[in-house]
Image 1: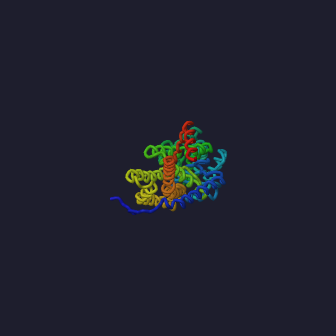
Image 2 (image 1 turned 135 degrees about the vertical axis):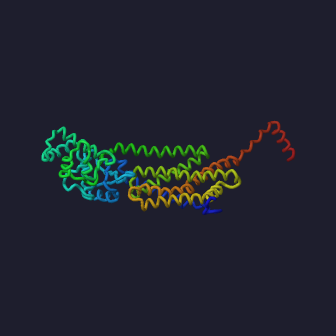
Image 3 (image 1 turned 45 degrees about the horizontal axis):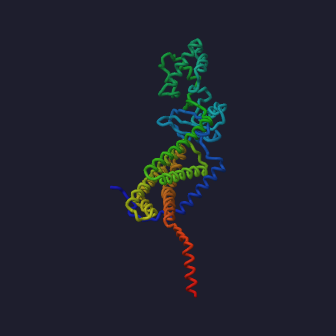
Amino acid sequence: MQMQIFANTNYDFLGKKMPFIIVSLLLLAAGLISLIVKGGPSYGIDFKGGTLMYVKFANPPHEDQVRQALSEKIQGEIAVQRVVNSNELMIGTEIAGEAELEAERTAVRDTLAAKFGGTSGKPDFHSIGRDALAEALRTPMQNAGQNLSTEDLRGIAAKMLAFRDTPPRSGLISSFDDLNGVPGVPAQAVQALKSTFGLAPFVIRSAEMVGPKVGAELRQQAIMATLFALGGMLIYIALRFEWIYGFAAVIAVFHDVIVTVGLFSIFDKEISLTVVAALLTLVGYSMNDTIVIFDRVRENVKTMRKESLHEIVNLSVNQTLSRTFLASGLTFMSVLALWLFGGQVLNGFAFALVMGIIVGTYSTIFIASPIVIFWHDYVTARGRTSAVAPVPAPRAAAEPREKQTERKERTKTARK
């Protein structure tokens, strides 16, 4: 049995469309003015470039603590996101070029060491390379009575690092004792590590530069993905209904996206890849809601030939009101919970969906439907004007000259 909250309603939605249209015009104007004043949307690191570091922790890290610690020491935007099902974080920071990459990496490492503990001034075993490790082992091994050649020391160092870097350790060990039993690694070398190196509770596994060129390509791909989605939906609706229905639906979705992007600019929120995913989700969600109402309009047009399209659309909106309330209401509550309690990572994604669902729900009723009615009334008015246009009366045929002369003679005789 289908659940209905609103049954047999008869609200005049289209009669109250003007306040919503005015609100939409104000939101569009405010958003566009904000975008113009600020020189366009504020893009995240995904689009404008910066560093991208993968940091693995010995214990499950807390993203908010990492973000706060880095924000206090490093200027610009800090993006922190957990890699699924792991103790690894993806950390993004803003830098101007590759020359600053190593300095940024050092700043991140020092900040995390101050927050979560470091190596008490000793070199970190997690970040050392083969040759440096071999040289560091030379003196302790000699003191232990092992006078090894450079190649032998490099071989031992390579075996230690291979053990450190292979899964499940993947660059991070919890104790030097884990190296005991590794083939080719003498106990004296493990003991030397304990006195020479420290073990930080994290390791920067990789650090790379995301350049502005990559960000520009991502922006272009995001715009093209949105346009292709709208184009495909326009074709689908035009084939299933009429072209004006597809045009109205696409205009309503454009309205939803532009208003949402404008709100991001007004509230100084950055657009990232997750926000683009939310906008594409909004496109599909809003379009689906529009199709449901238009499909009911099409069914009612076939059975209600005497009623006006205005009345048919109003009835169709009332008939689908329960479905709209349940679908939009439940989705809205879900994304609202994500926005309020989902943390910094999901904030932009959830904000886009919260605003988009509100705007998208009323745009179907008060933007898309009035466009269809306006076009229908315009076409009907043009047809009616052509049908009742006055037809010019034909001119009387010219009277022959003989008839004119005869008529004049009769008139003279009658006067006499």
